[in-house]
Figure 1 (cartoon, rainbow over the protein chains, first blue to last red):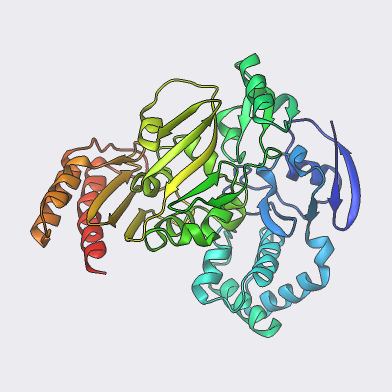
Figure 2 (cartoon, chains in turn orange, green):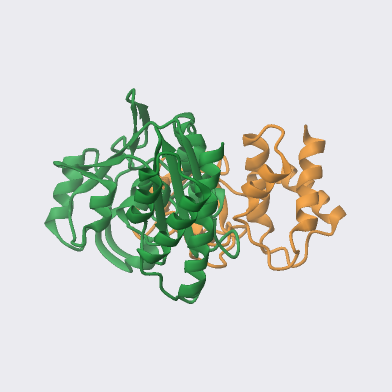
Length: 150
Length: 265
């Protein structure tokens, strides 16, 4: 079946299987910033923005995206670079596999919550697992990024 | 997932007729669990174009469309207003935001998931489920139904309640299923106690409720007796997440604490 949607501000049309998931469609079409890890809705590595809100692309059928807008880090590169700088300053990175999904969640957090508390931040990003960092450095980086972005 | 055809009907009648045509035609809710539960389907019937994604104020009740996402449900002011935000607080603990942006309230209810953090707080409230074509049943009836049905859950009707609520999800990490979850409400002087993930799905602790509801002004010792009854009246089982004895100890402690909390505030 053919599915048409807006991918990173560009109209696209892909031929997909009816049971195909968005993460697979994107990766097959060279959007490899979208990572697959658990592949069962539990880790957040595959996060993309659907109409501006974070969703798990490993669990979203591509067919459901018809007529909607999908954003990956490629479309918000300037913002992702800023987030990366804060992560670098705090030493919040190791392997980097979870970073793209986390960056999109942070970007969505910034747009959705005004003056979030520490608890709000933790609740918003809790679905993005990282097996390297231990989270404290990430939390500090996110907090500083949000404070300086105000 | 092996699927022959994806179908997005524009009416409930079209969706229902498609389900009746073949037992391998499957309804798609949020789509998060189907990947594990249903490796193949003939036709996947997607309800997103039918307009079941609204929450409406019906005066003394609210009507929640089955395709409302957990995230929209959690943030809705009408939902947040029920018993001190018990529903928003419970649903807000389910996995991460990106998960809740896809998962639907209807899917959470229709699946009767034993670990559900949606079913337990809803069980402690007055909730009616509307199915297409012609069925209106209580949440408890739905949870006790063991058969298979082609009826489509369309709306969840929740009676507004402005009392107090308590929800406790016991878990090892934020992204785990509940080892046990407990919801307690106090509305117009009546307590309701629901316990889920025992590991069975949520049920009302009727015996425990009787103890506190029969006492005109329940005391700490009534709460203690009710918590002991809540342990006695269910079967708690051992799973890889937790042992039966641990679950019993948790139930006893958190039922008592929950009763104290809703009675004090």
